Image (cartoon, rainbow, N blue to C red):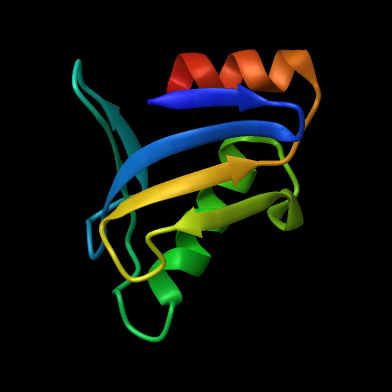
Amino acid sequence: MFKVTESGIIVNIKISPNSKKNEIIKTDSETKVKITAQPIDGKANKCLVEFLSKNFKVPKTSIKIIKGETAKEKTILFETTDEQKIDIIKNAL
């Protein structure tokens, strides 16, 4: 699910674009992030980064999609060394 590195925390999520509202749904096996944007021209990825940035109070420039740019399964790097933010991200995702 997640891995803490020296540059931040890496999280695996499943994205569900074109939803009614932006939200995080956590199950035992996976974390799903629903977003309102359509998966056209990178709009869903941009919306995902904005949503995660606002939700976890991490700058948008510190959130990178490192795997799954065009897939529903994504690997995201939150570039932060703030232990409190890492704990918040771990608990939410």
